[in-house]
Image 1: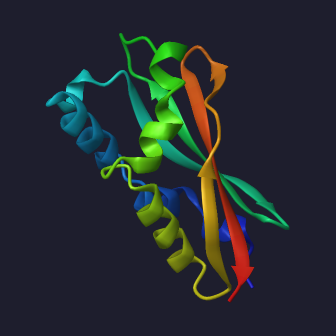
Image 2 (image 1 turned 90 degrees about the horizontal axis):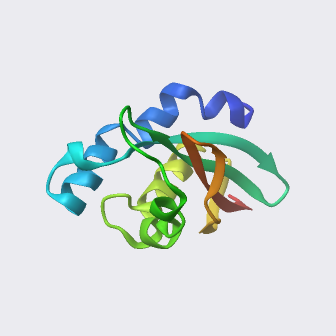
Length: 130
């Protein structure tokens, strides 16, 4: 069986959450994809007995400000936004598991400020045997 690191490679993560999704999100939000202050990328953080851990990383765009007041409410917004589509993302993650396990409940954690130009929103997915 492949390790989760082998399954969730950088290429696989880009397939799961393509850069275009950030543009689509800001297009829906502001009417112009260029208005956003950050780009969103999916990162695989690891696995434990309870499930899989990912992160939605918010990378500050050049000339923009990634302020806490912009990102602190995002977990709630992302959890229901149709373009971000966390439920669909979790379903796609389950497909990558190719029957090894099933994804159960998921939740987005609180926004974490890693640096001035990087904020992260944890995505935790519980796993069940297939």
